[in-house]
Image 1 (cartoon, rainbow, N blue to C red):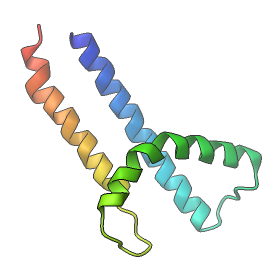
Image 2 (image 1 turned 90 degrees about the vertical axis):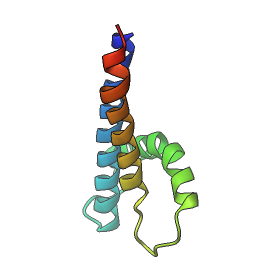
Image 3 (image 1 turned 180 degrees about the horizontal axis):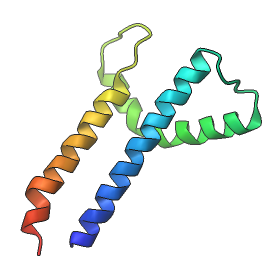
Image 4 (image 1 turned 120 degrees about the horizontal axis):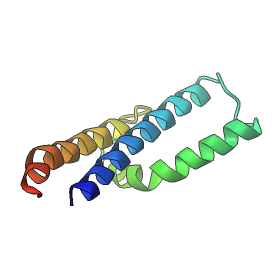
Length: 96
């Protein structure tokens, strides 16, 4: 059972990095540092968008309109850190 919890923790850590990469790439695209007409950038952006958008969309729907500020990735990071904390402090010590 600990192996399953370890795999869940690794998956959550990987998703954190994907979420950070998506946020950074969205900033780079918004400030015209990278161009989405480049095939490589477009492919990376499409993959990151498809991986993060299904989780971020419900959070965005519940948040009030903050203009151009999108804090849904920050809220998702907090949720992931909370889940990791619950796993480490409550589930992991009780599993043999």
